[in-house]
Image (tube, rainbow, N blue to C red):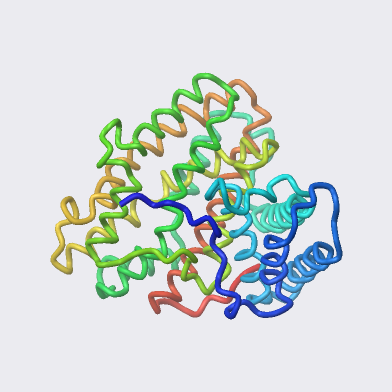
Length: 359
């Protein structure tokens, strides 16, 4: 089953969107006229609401404001990545790019401040050996909540809970190829070659039915699931983690951070996917036949992680030592996003202490 993005984008029904929220003002702007160089009163209200909601999230930990902000930004990125005949007409307008600028600068400022104590000195980050060790160590670290989530998926989750996990995880699985494509833009030919190998694998190595997106679709079908147009995340953290790929990949100045961010799921996800497989097998499924997406990723990512480090990250550091801290920063930002996502999964699965959303 091919997934064709809807022309109208990923907006929720108007009845579900609170009046005066960032999301409602964004929808009004998307439905309004295309004015490339002008900000009208509605656009100014939208940008003011975005700034106010970001402030409430940052200063007061307002989870509802954070959900409003990150869900709205998700719609904006889907406008960049989705149907070419949809809301892309706003792609070059002043208000659309002002929205992205405000959102992206605040995300990077706040999240970089949060991971600052996990970053080495720029001097240490200029050493390829140091960078490789840093990525491997950070990706393999598990906190208590990480272990609780993986143990639940493997040993206790019902089939309905596993279905909730698979459905929640689906939106990024369909978009991961796009994040890889955006990382392909030129820096070094050897790096482009390595990324091409990963893209080839995502495409099924020339065999259409083995494309990862189609494998994932078959996983959904095995459980009788489909993905709704709008993600079922009533939480800001999965939106923020999804958006981070495109905060980094859609801005050339963040190119090295984007490459560092992409390294982490290849290194981090292997153990969780193995837990999912064992959980599904516990319910009588044959992972290799029924859930090939997860089965193949356990073996594939065990190779992809080291290959990404050796073929993408380290050649860049060798050629451009000043890029080392950028690559590491991207990796640390992705680990922060994945930890937040695990907090969301813990809530979804009902395990561990209730985690308060962390702005």
